[in-house]
Length: 201
Image (cartoon, rainbow, N blue to C red; front, side):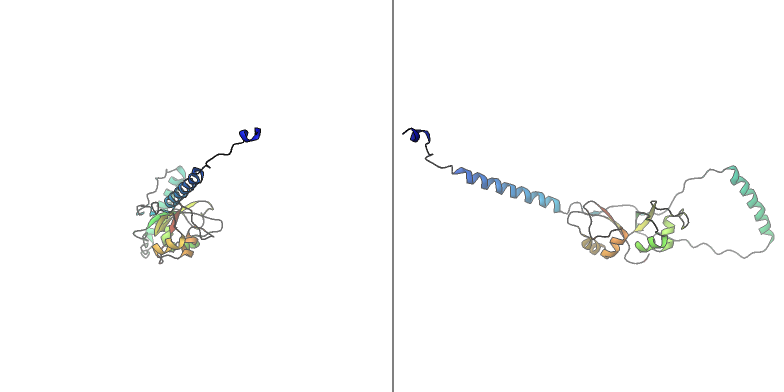
C-alpha cells in the first residue's frame, strides 16, 4: 500500500502537448515561406541609371623649363617647314562613343591588350581609345582601370541568372561571362554586371 500512494498515475493525459507542437511547426513553416519569398522577390533587380559619357576633360598640365626649350625648338622647325611647300594633312577622324551607352570600368588583367578588351565588350578599338585618350598599347598596365562603353550595367537581383539577364538585353550568356571575367555561369545578388553591346560599335 505504500507504493500505491506514492506513484499515482495522472487521471487525464496531457492532450495539449501535440497541439502546441503542431502550432509551433506551422508557425516555423510560415516564417520560412515568408523569408524565402522576401529573398526571391524582384525588388532589387534594376539597371543602374548612369549618364552617358559625352566628353572627357583633362587636367591642365604645368609647363616646365624643359617644355619651354622644346617650344623654342618647335618654332625654329615651323619656320623651316613654312619655307618648304607641303601638302595639307588629312583631317583626323573623330570617333564618337555610342549614344545611349553607359560607362563601365574594366580592370586590366595580365597579358590583356586593348584589342582583346575591345572584343570582350563588342566595341571597336577606336571606340575604346576614344573613351580612354590617355591610354596607349605602350602604357597599358596590369591592374589599372579602363573606361569602357557598355550597353548597360545590370544589378543582379534575387532570382536573376545570367540566361535571364542575357535575354533581357539580347546578349548571349557567353558574351556576359567574357565581359565580366567569369568562368562559371553564376552571378551573386547585388553584383553589377557589365552588359556588352549586341552588335559591334
